[in-house]
Length: 371
Length: 104
Ligand code: FES
Image 1 (spheres, rainbow over the protein chains, first blue to last red):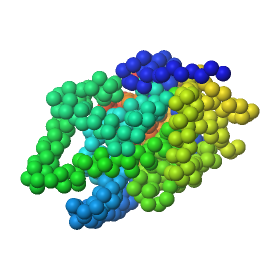
Image 2: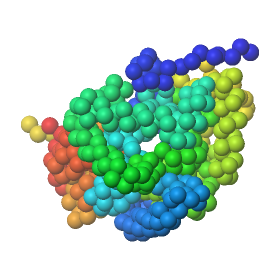
Image 3: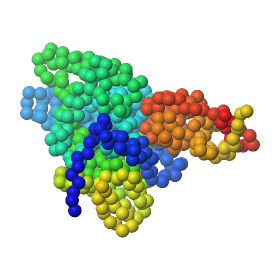
Image 4: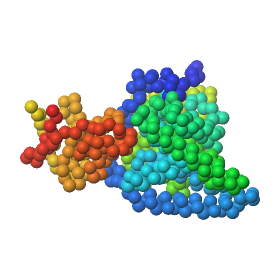
C-alpha cells in the first residue's frame, strides 16, 4: 500500500484552518462519557483547601531546593541542585498555570488569578494570550490548523521536539511575542484565537514582564553573576525537560482531527509525587472531557469513567516508550497511530467526519488507515 | 403581547442547579439559586454553542462546562473569560408549582 507522505500545514494561518471549519470538525460537538448529573455535580465542586495546602507545600519545597542550590553554587553539586530546583520550578509552574487557567484550582476567584499570574510568569507563558490559546486547545483538541498547542506535527521534527526539552523553540517564540506585544503588536497566529478586545491587556502584561526582565538583568549585573537569573527566568528553560517528559504523554502518537478525547488523549498512571507536581493531569482524557472537574477530583472522575475509556498507560516510561516508537514510525508513515481498543463496557469511538490516523472498526476489530 | 411558556415543575430543578429546556427550535437554561429563586437564560453559552445546563451553579453564577467561562444568570452579565458577551435572560413566574418563562 502506498503511504501518504503529504505534509500537512499545522499553522493556524494556513489552509487547514478553513478546511477544518468546512469539514465540521472546528468548534464541533465532542463525545462525552455518560455520568449521572448528581455525581457530576459532586465531582465539579470547588474547594480552596487542597490547593492552599498544595501551594504551600510546593513553595516550601522550592524554597528548600533553592537554598540548597544557592549553597552549591560554584561547586559540581550545583548541577544536580539546579536540575532539581528547575524541575520543581517548571513542572508545578506549568500544571498550576494550567489548572488556574481553568479557574478550577481554588474555589476563590482571586486566588486562581494570583496563582495564574505567578505561574504564567514562571512558565514565561504570556498570561492572556495563553489563556486564549488554551481555550482553543480545548475547543479543537488536536484539530490540525486550529489547535495552537499541538506538541509535534506528523511526521515529527526531532530537532524541534527534543529542543523543547530546554524550551528552545517554544520559549524563544514566547519571548519574541512578549517583545512584539510590548510594542503594541500582535502575532498573526494569535489573532486567530485572541479576541481584539483582549489585545490591550496582552500589551500591558508584556510591558510589566519586560520590566521584571530588566530587574533580573540588573540584579545579575549588580551581583556580577548569573545566579539571580538561575532562580527566576532561566529555570523555565533548564527545568523544562520535566514539563516535556510528562506533557508529551498527553496526546502524542494518537489520532488527529477526531471528535472524541478517548482517541486523541492519553491517561497515564503516575506515582503520587509526580501527580502532586503535575496536579493530577495524568488523568488527561478525564480532564479534556470534563474540564469543570478540579484537579483534586480527577482520580474519582477516573473511577467513574474508566469503563468507557481505553486502558490507561501503566507508567510514564511505558507511555514514552510507546510514543517514541510511534513517532519513529510516523517519520515513514505520517498516518501511523497507536491503536487502543476499548473495553466491552465502553461506547464506540466517535471519529467524526474527518479522522486522521488509524481507525478501528469496533465490531470486527478491523484496523484501517484514514485518508 | 407577552408569550409565557410552561417549562418544568420547579421541583425538577434542585436548588443551586440548572436544567435544560427545549421549546421549538430554541433551547433555554432554567436555574434555581441557593435561596430557591428561579431564573432563565438562553440555553447556549455566548462563547460557543455549548449547553449551559451541563455547567455548575455557584451562587448566582453559572460556569460553562466547556471553557469554564462564567455568567451571572440573574442579569445575563459575562463574568469570566472566555465569555465576553452577555446572555439573554427571560422573565419567569411560578404558577401551580410550574415555572413559566416569558419568551417575547
Ligand atoms: S463555550 Fe462556554 S465558555 Fe466556551
